[in-house]
Length: 89
Image 1: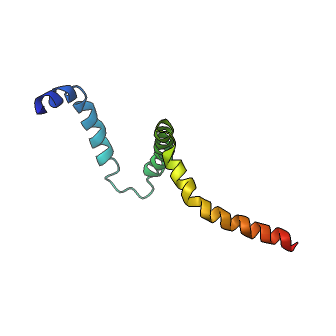
Image 2 (image 1 turned 30 degrees about the vertical axis):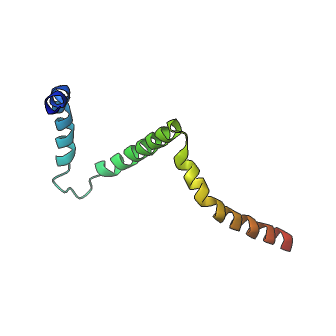
Image 3 (image 1 turned 135 degrees about the vertical axis):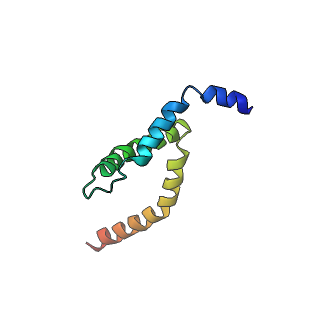
């Protein structure tokens, strides 16, 4: 098994290690105004979140249904509060 997996990964391992080490050792100088990590955060975060939502959509939306299930009791409290305010006026 180990030999098969190693043989399958051999063509992509140099690319993988190049990307990994370039990312790992970038910014090692501790420059005072390094904006690259901030830029990367704002670029990669939406990509990761949208990828997660895409996977969730493919799997049937179970993750969002769980969040909606957690939010329902809170929404009822706001609905009751809103109805009380409307009834007051």
